[in-house]
Length: 481
Image 1 (cartoon, rainbow, N blue to C red):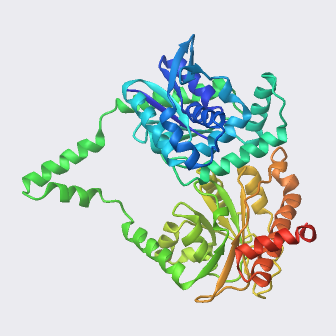
Image 2: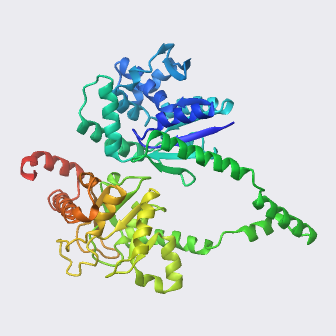
Image 3: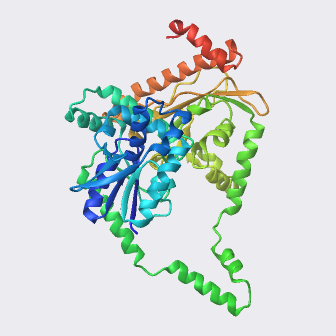
């Protein structure tokens, strides 16, 4: 069976592209997003809360989802009634994101999706098709576009349907939904390593469809080539048989990936980092998962990245380090496994720039110390920020995640680190980065100062108690504005 999986954020054009691909190939289009919307519609129509498991789960047994063919379209039906138009209201989109967080809902719909795909040639689009629903398919795509472009498309679509909507509200909702989809505990939106990423911001529908079709053709042509990997394994087995030794053991020896020792050592270092650099992390939930992000933090000592690498970045995260650490070959290999990107300070390091932008394009978070050097005075005031952070954030259209250590850090101390809410420099996206980097850098500095004020209140006035902190902020909201 041909199963084509397309993932991506809300409003990227997945459904439209999937329909075009299905039509070009003469196969069935299965709109998985519409299935979640249909569940959300039924829940809301019953007067229940779409974010409540207690409300939603008992209703699943009452829901029957089916499709009917009308011309070239597959119309979705809820308990026998065509609801294709009803589920496209803007409010239902938000409710669909809520019900999709409920494990029982996902299990209910994934089972139906897999059953259909098992017996039919289909194109599926959604949030977790490549990672969860059809992880074994060889046709995987991740379709994305800038939040602003997606908001414009959605706004135009709704206006054409006669709905009264506000562009700014749609943009805010899209960013909120992106964050929710990427950070939900069950099957979050993520670009799998074997998915082909396509940014449709400046592409027409036909250009996107043609790009996907060309990749499908290349995959099919590749499959027609001789299986050289299996052929080499057969040679190894033959050699082992002639020598009367265990073939499987020999194959493992000869095909074992290089660098295993350093990967093990890096994993060990991550564990040790968390032990020698004990740190209380406040509002860890603010840190986005499975997505690109530029992580910025103040800098006191050489080991400041310890907790950030071991507790926040994850195995795919990257961190900028000065080039000097790579002089020792053993340290260099471990640092590489830890995700370090070496940068030559005081000069234009083109290689480092390419590595940073490449990591962001692969949905990897990158930790950068924007001060460019350590604050050796130990004061709370940050040094002036370098403008490179703003440039990267604008070029990659990546969110910035601000972190802040409360005071000078150290091993085996009670270090404190706060994670601020991610923010975008989207107001500069339609401008050349070099012309606005100074203004954008000032915005980053303002956000860090705001986070400093919040951290000081949390630690000094509320003794690290988050309940007291929220109460304090509520009571002094006018003063803090």
